[in-house]
Length: 127
Ligand SMILES: [Ca+2]
Image 1: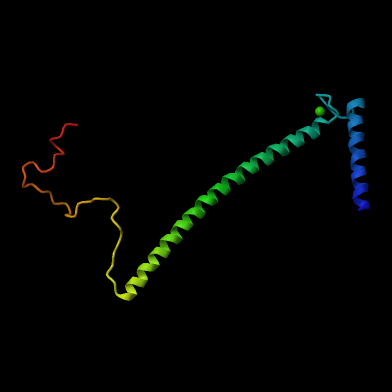
Image 2: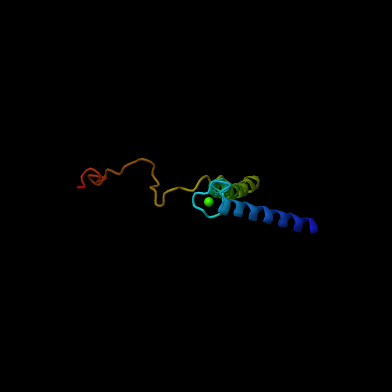
């Protein structure tokens, strides 16, 4: 405990000495005359910039990880769904296959009813 106190005291004295030396005696370069050497200000600015850049990158990566985790959750849900089909297969139920992607898709595959003259109005309808 005493060691920490001594270290803090030494750092404070050092800081005070640098401040006084810079502000009143011009020991280091200080263009804006605020008692903080320009070298220190430049280092602090660079560190702040680096932290900002790193934070941005970490946020971007966290967002991407979240996206990918969502994809994995979807895939696991899909796999759990498919596992049910295996149970059905073991029981001897017929294969259901994929659900049709479109609702109300015609039951006949590719055959056009031409009995009622004209059939599809795709080519006759004005667009
Ligand atoms: Ca300064």
